[in-house]
Length: 303
Image (tube, rainbow, N blue to C red; front, top):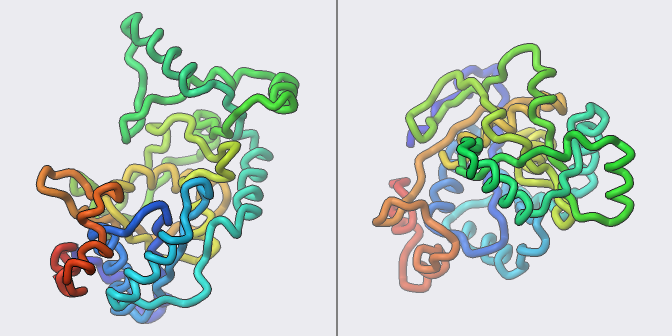
């Protein structure tokens, strides 16, 4: 995938990009593609390549996988400034962002369990109702909890009822003066490029924090990109639709908007994107079988 040159103007600051894996499994060839596209872009434009460890879910993060990330990327010939940013060390930043959204009246505690949510949706669909689903195919949260009074919410939280914090999407959209958009220098799954109109409403009331995970991917990545002054987000096209949520959060939190470059994915013989659960495509496994960095780049479509 050609990465458009967005820094030919000498007045444009040198770019900062990032590769941000989660240490919950071994990196595979698809990760190598994204990492190398970021690293090549930074190198070609006199910019900075950052490595970020997205270990916000501490229940799944493993030290051995983080070590493997460093080893795999170094073996591929990549380098980066140290120390790296670990999400687990910045919970306060995510809590501050949540606090800003609470002040805006855009967060509510969602108490329905997964089983209760499934039952509610099944009941509605049994009557012929078409239940909305997000771009990943997951059903929207029913949103009954939006109607709870502040006193009821406080009482249930004080009683220790499990809950997640969700964004009141309709309230957030109602506060917009105009449609949001982003500059796409790569392409989406259907070839979308150029000025893209964001559609965050397609995601419903997204989760921004759970009891056991202090920030969702949507919130943490948006905050991290701003804190690290990421100028260009280069990532797989599977995250193209999620950019709509990130644009909304950037707007609500008054954060800068990076340029986006989504790229195609490395897929298996059945056309499915690679998974960490398939160890045969891991960089470590291929290295142990005698593969060279050039072999990995070839498999990743880099050369």
